[in-house]
Length: 249
Image 1 (cartoon, rainbow, N blue to C red):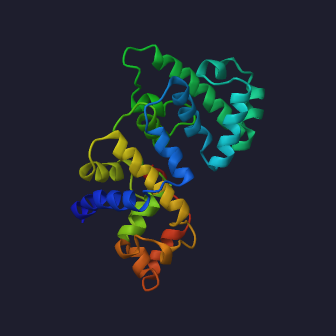
Image 2: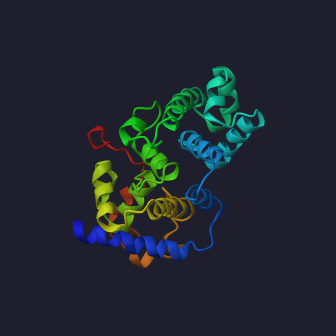
């Protein structure tokens, strides 16, 4: 089963790439993150990974626009900004007090990385930043530093759980899913980042958490959930809120 699932990842990547040839706005944002970036664009990507947590891109766009209107367009400017003012500017992104502290920690760390010869932090260093977990750390490695690392988010877990009809994807350790992806996908930051972007786009437009649009899904014939959830009641659990046990984080 493990080998079969691992081999399926490259097929899923190819099918999603075909389906989303015409890029939707949200997907376009992710794809722009994969291109060569200026220092300011890296700044925007980095703070975006913090601001997007538990909210949507419309709110993130407003928060980033607020920062840019105040000429806060670098990590150094973040550190020069009074905390209360920073909180107000990013309020549209929600959890603004927590995210303001995370942005400050992130800015201190990134200022430190830029002075190093290679300029690329380790995954452990990123996870040590306040407000940065495994998914965010891997997103930073891929989108800011062009590192070939699979990104495993909530959308990824639910998407794989439905495709393969394996509820265990909702509880598997993060690194186990990464390893499965690594066994099948090329070690290429662009492909791994694009796969993440494709899964996010598909999950938001079709494979919703509740009442996924299976009848409109071009992957239905390849999806266990899409074909059999009406006959296999246990598959319905895949549409429920995902709660990952502490031991699996």
